[in-house]
Amino acid sequence: MFLHRQTGVDIDGAEFRDLGRTDAKRAQTVPDLDDTGNLIPGSDDNTVGRYALHFHVVSGARIDIPPHVVRNSVVRGSPKHGIVNHGGHLLAQNNVTFAIAGSHFFAENGTEIGAFRHNLAVRSTGSGEDLVSRMGIFDNGHQGHGFWMQSAGVRVTDNWAFGHAGGAYVVFGYSFAEGNSRTWFDAHNTDNRVNADPDGRISTSDVDLYFARNYAAGSTDGVEIWNHKLLAPHPSQSLIEDVTVWNVSRHALFIPYVRDTLIRNVYAYGGEGHMNTDFAIGGNSQTENITFQNVSAERFPTGLLLPRRGINTVDGAFLRNRTNIVIESANRPFRMVTLKNIHVPSEGATTNLDLKDMAVPANGDIAMLFEHDRILWTNAGGKTLQLYFGSQNESFVPFADKGPADLRGLTSGEIKARFGLAFGGQLAPNDAKPLPRSNATMAFVDADSLAPTPKELEYAQNPSNELYPLAGQHIVNTEDQAVKSRWTVADGVSGPERPNFVFVKKTSPKLIVHPLLRKLEIHPDDVRYGYRLEGIVADMVGNRITEMAFIQDFPQLRPDEQGHIALDVKFPDPAGDMTSLPLSLTVTKQAVRRGKNYEFYKQAQYCGKCSFDAEMESDIRAMFPQAQ
Image 1 (cartoon, rainbow, N blue to C red):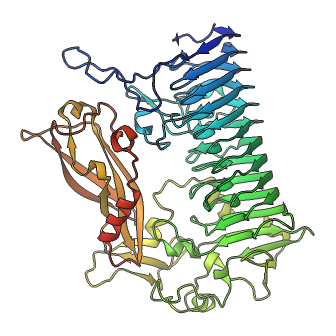
Image 2: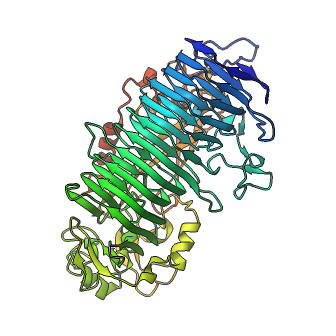
Image 3: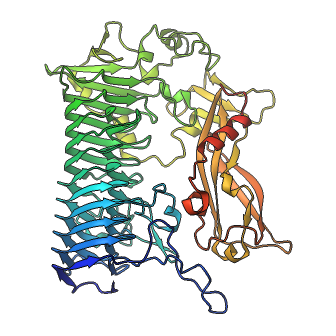
């Protein structure tokens, strides 16, 4: 361990064998003292920071001074991490790491700079726990990875990562805290300071990423980028290029909660035994503004899963998968997708393009389906066509026997004529033709249609910070006792900012607490560390159950004379309104003694296999028996 030195270490041609004591299989601990100055038992059971080679700088990295250097070296057999840059400036180059349980190359708190380049990372076993099971205590990279970066401040180029239990490469932009302070990236250490605050700090999630010429194979995922520029105040583009991934069991490139990124020259070749939900390249419901150039995907259930919001382009793709491209209904207004230069071999997919129609957002917001949404395709002859979901055809019946009463049984054409509502903001023209090997229809449009509209640009350039897009407009609460919860067409109140199709809601949300927390108890020794309450907030919108993950922290706890602690729990409903729920936490020596580790209930040493999803779903269904 090199402590609190900014420069001056040069390691060349060394071997580090079977070193390090922190164990990836258990949550890390931090030694702590009681009020009398004595060590609290258990707080040193798995002390953080004991790695094979650890540059423990913590903060103050500077681009204008030479980095520490580790090159031409070997790290073999560490129970947690291999080469660790903790808040410093480090160049790790031409190294080989083998059989590291956690992360072979690890950038710890998001303030790091330097590079991981020309390294080979082989085999990790990982903790067997979920990626985020220890995120709240800032114990990351334990799943088994070749490279883990807490921000994009470290350049990752020309590396090889094989045989990893988790993602071979992970950039994990969630905020990090040391002591009681959040870490920030120093804007002086980057050329692009557009997202810096007045103090010269950039959120660790908003640093531009450069990730190039890396290889991954034989792992669960190839590359994972999490929470990158999702709420960045100003647009700037990150770059992922020249990446090759093969024989992975899930995804080649997974980009959840990622905005404003160019992905080019990526080659993905699937493995064996994929699940139907696996895809080569894609994100989640909040991935936005992604450009794909010259990407290839073969032998996956799905090749490209395209974003549900923002302005997105695929320009050049070679695809040979069961389904080549999946585009779901938009979950934010004014989504735009442009497709061109797509090459699909004749013997390839069962389905070339799958438009997943009527994909209602998680908050049950059916009205979102009527917001503007455009999908454009430039064919091999250079002609521009617009593609349409099945629901955009006049004869389609979207709500045959369930759904909003006002719309039930009507065709899309009748809904448009009667209420002015059209899926995706417009119906397909009468001359639209089926697109071969697809469930889409298509019609020629002017080439000018390829330019984003002012509204599309406005939404794409402004990040979405609400719990659910347009929740406060499409879903509203009412205290009118004479009104029943229902979707309704609000004639006479529509306008540019007021949709005319809303859900008037009278139900109250329910909190389903995590099964291991339902005793609502805490050990007296742990009161000093605070408490985390986690669960699911469920509600009804129409005949749909809505679910939203819930976490609330209580950093300061004050027991009363009876040993109870009042918790003022607050959680939102699908309309965005808050509900208060008073709960009482009991202080008892019968509770789990977990120290600072307030996410214990997610970890195998406390919860075994930790499979509680089915139990919680059953509880939710029991609360809303009327749901269809």
